[in-house]
Length: 354
Image 1 (cartoon, rainbow, N blue to C red):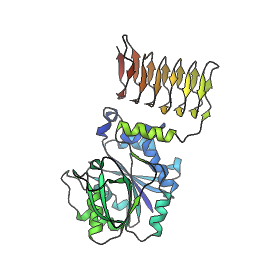
Image 2 (cartoon, rainbow, N blue to C red):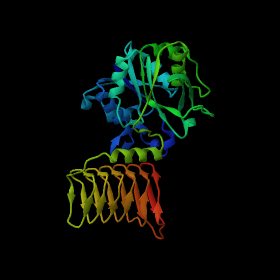
Image 3 (cartoon, one colour):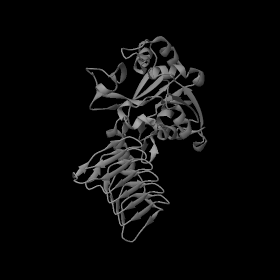
Image 4 (cartoon, rainbow, N blue to C red):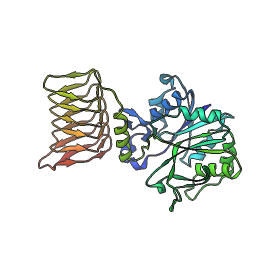
């Protein structure tokens, strides 16, 4: 069984951050989102993985490499334009050949992994297994309508959803899906929709089994969801302090402080991750915060936020909360000051706060 990770989207909902980096490489708990998908496939015993890439392919290739760090083999499949999930399957036919496969959206994180689902698919007689979860805003997703426990109808981003069961970004198919992707027509969005492909399988009498996800799942396409995924993953970490903490500082709760990180006269309250070569001085770092390597946080309070590598946050009067701060950003205080700040800042930015 092979794996197919889709990593070709433009990430328009995360601009300006994604003007300068691939959305699938935005870190959650200091790990690129894309890596969670690779790890999920590896844990399920899948070692031959294709990654569909677009405009950001060079950056993704540099970050992922040949897959040897995970013990898998990576094949890159260029997609000239983001023409739909089914189009990604279509252009991957030579790689997938006649094998069953898992398709995993590169900006998704599934808490429980997919190992048991892969086994369920291998042992069953289904031609496809789709993962579903209840959502409060089904009009934002592909939606499935079930009848007597079987898939009846699927619609991509319906204006009037008949169900609140959204398609999770993980799908399993046997080779019959290629018959589907070659038969369907582009939708009103000018894309080949995976929902139309699955509907084709249903209409042609192929077995499409639904599976309701019980654990959490996040599509990290928006800042709110990235921060929520960061929180959920940090809730499960175990603390490990390898950096330097002076006697004036306090580290409470589950905190990962990597070797080379320095904490001076500060309070770190977990769960939190602070990467190597980062300095925290005269500051408070609160729960659900991930700070990447090479950062400086001085005279600042920050929590429930993500700070990317090489950024400096100094002398901020109020507390930074629910923020996603890009690479090599500088944030500093210019009086007078407000009491609370919220940021979504692109790379190489400088912000003077008045």
